[in-house]
Amino acid sequence: MPEEPVASPPPTPPSRLGFPAAFLGAVVVMAFVLMFALWRCERVATSAAAAPSEAVASVARAFKEILQLQPRVTINERVVLNQSTPLLELTVLQREVEVEREMEHTWMGSTKRVRLRGHYRVKVGFDLSQSFSVDLSDQPGIPARVSLPAPRILGVEQIRTEVLALENGLWNRITADNLGTELAALPDEAKRKAFRAGVTREAEQAIVQQLSARFPQPPGVEVKIVPPGPPGQPQ
Image (cartoon, rainbow, N blue to C red; front, top):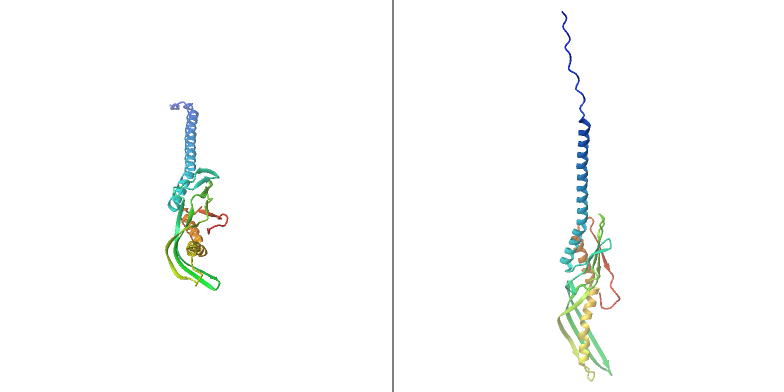
């Protein structure tokens, strides 16, 4: 007797949860992607905001250590830090200078003569009442731009004075005014000699070198020396 075929079970109907589950998974993934994007945006914004602050703090530290002042700092020409300093002048180098002066005057065949030698310490630096400024950019790769007034001879300090000659004429005598005038002229001679020797240029090079070392490369720093004002005493 032939065997009856075994009946196979009826096919399982397709699940109705497949599409909702896939949709829910996609929503969860999109939510995570959105949250990550927002987090990254926040980090970038925070870093961008912190970068100028760090740069300003670095500039302030450099000037305080080198020139003992706080310069005016701008970011894209917007002032973020005003200049301040507790000092009026800052000496950055000193040089000793020796000068001589001689005066000879003849009246009615009678000659008087004065010859002096002075030893001075010349002080070179900055007038801190003038403007010191730093311009920063919030764009990467642009160097800091530093503007400094030209260094100048701030003063001279007398070390010693020697009288090399005091010679009176028979009736043309050396007066106190003669001697006082020659003594008063010695400091100006010391200033002129120091200036011709390049002390202000030496001070400028020293400051540029120190500032350049404090601003890492890249982007580095561009230092501009503002020319001195009208001629007067040697700058």
